[in-house]
Length: 225
Image 1 (spheres, rainbow, N blue to C red):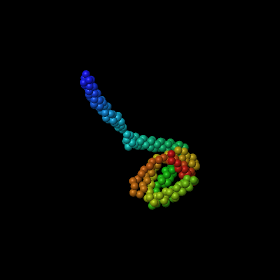
Image 2 (image 1 turned 135 degrees about the vertical axis):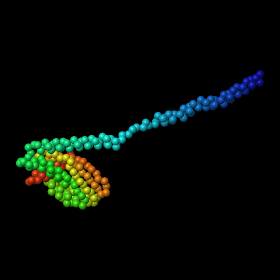
Image 3 (image 1 turned 90 degrees about the vertical axis):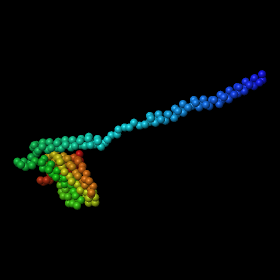
Image 4 (image 1 turned 180 degrees about the vertical axis):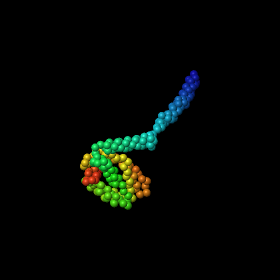
């Protein structure tokens, strides 16, 4: 009987040993899906984290197809308005008198046009003579400020860096005119060249105020608008 008990005890021990040895295998077997899921998670996260490609704004196309046509349209409309305004003033009662004589509006517009071109045009070799002559078309405080600007900045810069400028006035119109003062609105184009560099073009509008000095109109104010 003792042998039977002993035999039973050995059987129990062997079963426990078998169970103990089998448990890691079962745990490992159960852990395998977890490892597979764990390995799969970064892939899913990477898939979710992939940024969706976005289409950026092509500013060159915006400028070429929208901005530039709008600017051209505004300039054309402004030039048309100036032409209409000029014709309206010419048809008004601003004549100096006498058939064939120019009206005050016509003479003031011409003086503003010529003066603006002279103020903004020069070459490096003749800049002193050109801008010196332009000063003779000015009066009052504007003459003084223009003289300081040209002597201190424009003339030295033009000589040192070989800067030249050419201004044109494609459109101009009289805004108001009396016997002593006139206001003229102008569209101005200026082409500036610095040494061997390519020319750069700028367009602007200017409100010019003129005062009558004898039989001449002199520029007293020059305000960009």
